[in-house]
Image (cartoon, rainbow, N blue to C red):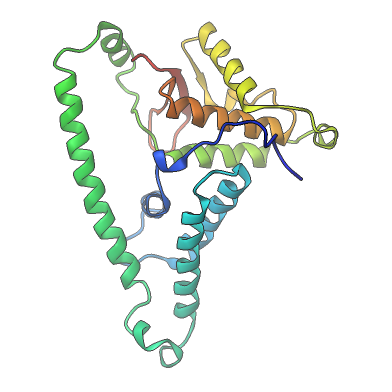
Length: 242
């Protein structure tokens, strides 16, 4: 069953946020495991859970995540075999190539982050008053949370809500465009809103998905920002002051 109207032109480009290697690094950090000794069965299972969410959202670069999923499944299968039955190239440790990829990518990300930090420091030499006020008022809140934090929170909402099946059968015409308008109205009436509150009155899976795609689209366009006051904590959505 199609979960939302294909004629709705909003297609969120996840690559503007993060990609498959970012998801692996996120899972390694979240599980507090050693990047040199990845528990491949656990990480693969969690990775596939995120992949199922990405596929349901019909995002545009899921193919990249599927390719890495294939690599993870292959590594997992090799690690389950006795050493004498493994491919010759995999005798040492099937995870070595993946670890090398992750370390190289992490080095690249750190360099990019350092450059971005320098640019922000330069731009804040002459900050706008509105931006300065928001940062002082919310000094304990961190910016730029991972898109995977959003996906994790979204997944929990899908699991926790009891949807009205009749609405799905009737194919109530929710669209991402409408949900963007609703979010704008909500944020015009209050400074910020909890991520979970956005979906509180949603009665169907389709409506929840459209709301979530609206959030991603508005973040991408710089209309809103998502924040947390602690790692993996409650997500707050706030209008962006540019």
